Length: 118
Image (tube, rainbow, N blue to C red; front, side):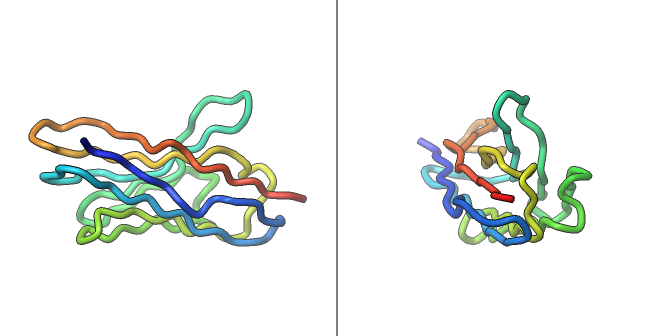
């Protein structure tokens, strides 16, 4: 059974940095797109950034210039380095991956809380 396990969330002051990690485990034939989404209290889940297997990236406007997504294909892991954090970045951050374990499916992590204090 494929699982995505996130780590790295926490409480940080405005202007600070955090690095999120998400590792996929289980029977995995291949991983295509990986990414990060977030959901603030009372709001819909929104895209933060995605990265293809080849390294092509896509960022939400709110993340451009402050966040960097990367991945290690050998470790089935995706990272989100966040700089210059703002209170409005406070949310639960979810890892996403499109994975084949013989059939292609979308998988989500359990979420990790990021809280930015002003």
